[in-house]
Figure (tube, rainbow, N blue to C red):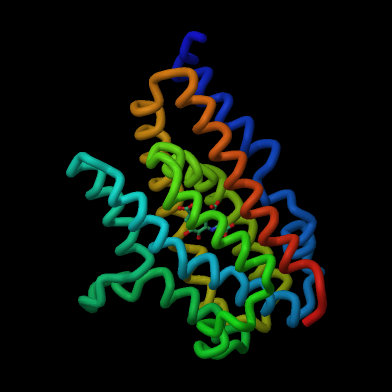
Length: 232
Ligand SMILES: O=C(O)c1cc(C(=O)O)c2c(n1)C(=O)C(=O)c1cc(C(=O)O)[nH]c1-2
């Protein structure tokens, strides 16, 4: 079968997130309408920390599979975005530290966030599924899975507005993580899309990329299912 044109391939990738991205998950919709209790919001922050702390791990797995310096440079920057540089410059604390501060702003201690035993099993399984996918599948598939980030900036903007409006008990300084991700996520998404378009040349590779992005949407969806269920 002939490969799709770059335009058609892009449309097919965007169709996946349009239909399946977690911005339309019931838990996110409730968050945006201001319906979450403090306990529910704290449960989400703790569960999502488990996801965040594994992002640089899966990016290191992708990094090891990229064979060009310019590609590795992009992925090294992603790892630094999350882990920080520690050199005291602007933003040097990194995304994981910013998420810990979000947790503190919501009344969660750092120890609570690092404590895996508090994370619901379904959240752990979803995150492990994503990391294992990036460890075992071709690197191109793992890069394609990250393309949910094309949709993340809009979600971040909605989330920031919702937190400011509905959850004023969270110190706005704690929202720095989301503010930073608006630009980082947009840039990461566009760079990953360029890499996928350039690297997936056969129809089979393109279809695998679409499947990888579908899988990733399911990871994010399953994670929210696990946060939304049960009691705190
Ligand atoms: O809060 C969100 O809804 C959300 C979604 C996603 C995403 O779409 O995968 C990421 C993030 N946040 C995020 O903060 C982040 O660093 C990130 C990295 C990745 C990735 O797959 O490489 N996705 C996301």
